[in-house]
Length: 303
Length: 257
Image 1 (cartoon, rainbow over the protein chains, first blue to last red):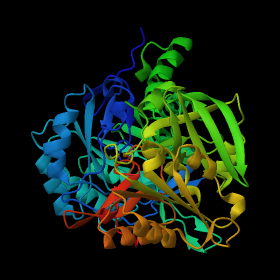
Image 2: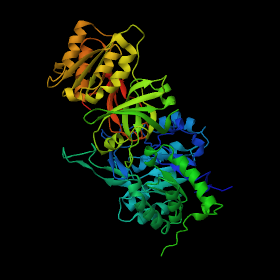
Image 3: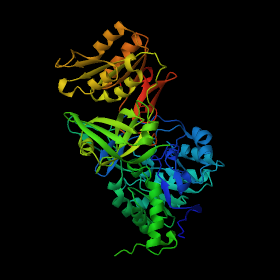
Image 4: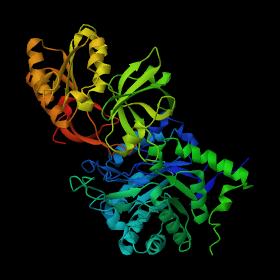
């Protein structure tokens, strides 16, 4: 029997596969395909202090091996999450990661404080959404601000804290070190890469927001590189994401240094991808004589 | 529960230039499907699935029909599937049309490739339905014989007068309402057509359901990309075509986009 369990910042996951925030709602839709208990955890839709309408459409553009989105954090707000979504999720037998996005440093702390005692297993602080004007990537692209937001959340809660990093920076390792120094227990990366598509007939951007975040297999090598660099720069664990679509991708990401993985856009091509990755990891371990999957974390042998 | 799987195509027809008609054997989907619902079709080599409305459901035969137009390279890829090939779909998705009790009368308005989902709902009403379909010209005027075969009174409009009435579906709709007021109007087609159909329905105090289209990713309501502006309880919100729709009460839709 292969041991697929992993530990991130003291939180035990039965397996390392976690649907990524924004790609899985609060689980209700995908529960109509398979039981959520098959998943290591769920990173829920980005939640803000108050309800947000998000950006006007079109919000999606297909790209080669991926897609752009400009949803803009549409969600019902933290109170609805606590009263409506969380009680349902808690009954599903999987770890719950609350993804939160404040529009100011203070609001980020306030959001975290509201989760105290709620029973969420972990907080994923989103400082990297490319589609909002306040907060989001404006927090995640500056070391000082990233540190300050992390500290505000750290001071507000004892819940294990993971900070989700933006790839749209010169040095992701500097940002990672800053959030580590300010109390983050883990980092997750990468959020989407800022991109753009233009309809050459109308000369209009396909997205109503002009620009949006690129995800899907197209970004996978960038994500692996950034996870590897970050793993060499910080001591806290890393949850790797960006273009993962198969068990082999997940293995590669873990060898680069990720303790667990998140799966996002690939779910839109195949809703069963997270479950297939769990099954595929078990097979891969068996075929390769690996008894404990966690033994492969960071085992890449660089030249 | 949603079904995702690969199902055999048991019939394929090219019904007009760039328009294809696939019959898919998928008994479980056919059993659950309602008029107005759609399926998410995988196009080999493309990252996102393509939403295609269900044109017809044969519950006894266990099949659904997908009639679609080649709009780009993704739908072109789907059009290359042949009889005997397997098609990867997630289905049935979204909310279908509301069906009134027997004896009630309906007018179904389809514009261009908005016509296929009208066949499915018109069949529920049979001779109590009238189907108004609009096309640019006669060469792409699809499904007219099938409406008639189902006992539906089919009114065809073309922009150039090459078949049926020369003019817009909205003109024909006004005429048909004058002849006999229906209990409900269904519509699917370009946004400007839907806006005008909704206005005519409202002027006449007739319930109207419209089926919307938007670029999608997940198709099930998780990713939130397929927005449309709607008004509910006096409050403007971004709804999602895949899960809240694709069928909406026309009074709830902000047709300005």
